[in-house]
Each structure stands twice: as structure tokens, then as C-alpha cells.
Image (cartoon, rainbow, N blue to C red; front, side, top):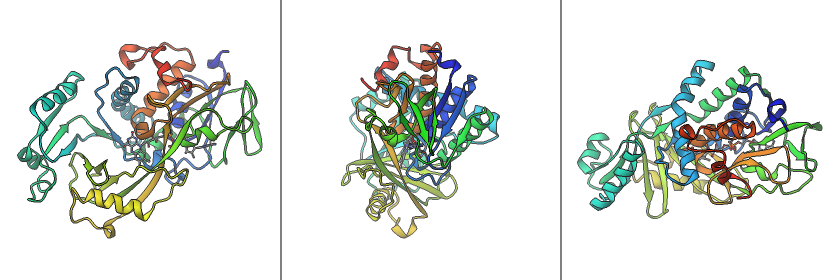
Length: 388
Ligand SMILES: Cc1cc2nc3c(=O)[nH]c(=O)nc-3n(C[C@H](O)[C@H](O)[C@H](O)COP(=O)(O)OP(=O)(O)OC[C@H]3O[C@@H](n4cnc5c(N)ncnc54)[C@H](O)[C@@H]3O)c2cc1C
């Protein structure tokens, strides 16, 4: 098979589908992207539009998933510049830094080890005691009753605006000649051995297919029932609240009663996003009153005066979680010659989606993968196989 000479159909118009379609089209491949909803903020449940857009500065290391996060982080500056040049659209990329808030400084040995890990990865990070924390973010942590008296400051953490990213990827796909079929209804795979795509009563055969259907990726099959791509939906709710600290770093903290990490991401316009819940709610993308209460309770650890009535906006999305350890699925779907999957990025799909797309497309088309640039050679990508 000569994939480069074939036509490809990409199923799903989230960050994964748009990134895969863009990478294929850049290499002169003819691509159709099929999205059951619309490629816009109102796509029901799609994770991309619900994301907080935090780009964690990963220290990399030996685990393939950590290395993918590190590669994802490193690709963003060029992606932001490239999309701006190509489409004129700003994806809101900015290096904000993050404060991992703590009740007190850990032991000296722990401090030194954590700082060294980041330094060795070329990232700037340091512990802040109460006084330095108050100087960096005046007024938030100098109250008597503040739960937080120390923080680990990672200067390199970045953010992006996910809706702007998706719109810019879409515009780039259009410029590169990708045929976009939105509001298509659900596309399905059928056939044996060599799959074809069924959508709105039409059959599309003789193509390579890349399944980027997020948490729905395991369902996208007619003839074979369960597709054999074990992915589940994990609902995340988030809220927008007033916060007048435009240059505040991303705030990350745990809630002892809820035993989970939450984030407050200042948007620089008098508002901040607070996220997120982690819920097993099947494929239900609804916002719930319990979810809103949970987020307000968590956020009040930092913003004690916040009340439910202050919520400006709320939303929910379904994260695709690969049900095998080790990160997302990137590779051929077992049992079919012409079907690949790029899905299951769970809580880091904005960070790792564009980098994953590049690696998968290079693998599909048999291109050289530069280990010094990506951290991967072809064999190392096997860590993300469905049958791992
Ligand atoms: C509240 C929340 C906060 C998050 N915060 C972050 C963060 O800060 N940083 C980060 O990196 N990640 C974050 N994530 C995770 C990130 O958003 C996801 O990992 C990523 O968006 C997944 O992208 P995707 O394209 O695989 O899936 P999706 O965005 O869900 O896209 C899948 C698309 O496929 C379409 N589709 C499904 N089935 C079919 C079919 N049969 N035919 C045609 N189309 C179909 C769907 O309509 C959908 O548009 C967050 C997620 C949530 C919910």
C-alpha cells in the first residue's frame, strides 16, 4: 500500500481531527474531514471546545507519554507563529507560568529535587515562600486565613485559547484544500479487512481513514459492533468567574475535601476560568448544579468571596480517556488495513494533539521521524499502539 498516493478521510473535527487533516494536506494528500456536529464552540460535548487550554511544561523523561507531553509543549511557539502567518488568526498562546499552591514549603531535599528536575529539562522553576508568593501575586495569599503559604512556581507553563486554536486549525485546513463536511450526522466504519466510511447514506471507499472521534472513537463502527478501541468519556465541567488579575500565573491547587487538583486560569480580561470536574457520566455532556457547587467550593480556597451567583458562564466537555495505561492511541486499528486512530489524550489533548498528529502522519506516510527533534523514533511510537 502507498498511503501517500491515497485519499484520506478523517473522522472528527476536534483538535485531533483538525491537526491530522492539516498535517496530511500539508504533504499533498487529498483529505476529507467529517464532523457529525459543527466545528464551532457549540459542538455538543466535544472536549476541544471545553478545554482550559493549559499547556503544562513537562519535564519529559523515560515514559513515552511524558516525552509526548514535552514534545507537545515544545511545538507550540512555532505552531502559534505558523497559524498566525497562514491564517492571520491569533491562538492566544502566552507563557504565563503556574503556581502550584501549597500550605507550606516541603522539606529542603524535596525542594532541591523538584527544582533540579525542571532545570535539567531546561525549564525554570523554583519554590516560593509566603513573602515571595505575596509579592508575585499581591492581595491573594497575604490574608491571615489563606490556606496557601508557599508555592512551586513553574515559569514556563503556557496557555492557549482552545476555541481560537480550533478556528485557526480549521482555517488552515481550508487553505490547504481539506474538504470539510460539517453537520454530517455520525459517520461509521463498515466492511471487513478494508473499511469504508458510511455517512448520511453515502459510502466512501478506497480511502485511508483516521479516526479522531474523541471519546466516541470506540463507537464508530457499524459492521463490527465494538471497534476494539477502548476509550471512555470522562466529563469535565468548568466555569467563568470574575477575577481582576490579568497577569496572574495559572493557579493549581488541591482541595483536601474533594481530593483533586483544580486550576484557575486568568484570561486577562477581568475573568478567569475555573476547572474542572472529573466525572463518570457516560456520554452526557450536561452542566449540573452539583458540578457548579464543586467548582465554587474549590475556587473559594483562593477567592473566598466567590458565590454561585458570580458565575458568568459554565460548560462541560467529554474527555477521551484511553483505557490502557501509557497515554493515547496513535496507530493502526487492529483488524483493518486502512484505519488508524488518534484518540484518548484525556486531560492533555490540547497540549499533545498537534504533536501527536505530526508523529502519526509521519508514521502513516513512512516519513523519517527525527528523534533529536521529537524524542521518538518509529519503534518508540509502538508505545501508543491500540494493542499494547
Ligand atoms: C473541562 C476540560 C478541561 C480541559 N483542559 C485541558 C487543558 O487545560 N489542557 C489540555 O491539554 N487538555 C485539556 N483538556 C482535554 C482536551 O480538551 C482533550 O484531550 C482534547 O480536546 C481531545 O480532542 P479530540 O479531538 O480527541 O476530541 P474532541 O474534541 O471531543 O473531538 C472529537 C470530535 O469528533 C466528533 N465525532 C464523534 N463521533 C463522530 C462520528 N461518528 N462522525 C463524525 N464526527 C464524530 C465529535 O463531534 C467531536 O467534534 C480538557 C478537557 C475538558 C473537558
